[in-house]
Length: 193
Image (cartoon, rainbow, N blue to C red; front, side):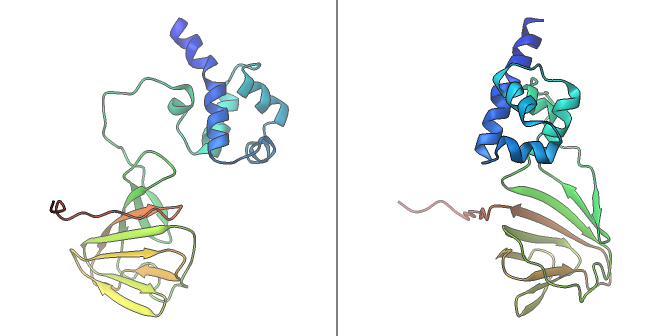
C-alpha cells in the first residue's frame, strides 16, 4: 500500500513537470481538459488526490499513457501492439509508444489512395520515408517523384508535400516523423580516426 500512496503523491510533481516542459499554462491546460485551474493547481501541489476522472483528460492532453502519469512499473513485455489509424483510406500503424519526439509509423496505402491530385499540405516537422513495397508518389514542392522499394526520401514538412499510391498494388512505407523538426542522423559506417 505504501507504493500506491507514493505513486499517487508523485503524480502532482509529474504533472507540473510535464506542463512546464511543454510550456503550457494552467489556464491553457484547463481549456483543453475541462478541469478548472484551481483543481489543476491543487493536483500539482498535492492538495487534491488524482482520480481516474481527472487523470484521463490529462493523459490525453499530454499525450501520455496513464501508466506514465502515475509512474506504474514498467512491464516486462517490450513489444508494441499498434492500433491501426485510418485516414483518407491510408492505414497508419504506430510503431512507437511515446508521444512527442520522433514517431515511427508503417503506412499501408491501397492503390490510388489518397487521390493522386490531393492538395499538398505543410506543417511543422521533418519526415523520413522508406518504401518497403509497391510504389509511392511523392509530390514535394515542384518535384513529382515515384519511389520504389528500398528508396528513401527525407524532407522538411514545411515544404508543400503529398504522398499517394499510383498503383497498381498496395504500397507499404516506413515513416519516421519529428513534429518539432527533429532530423534523423544516419551513419553508414564509423568515422575514420
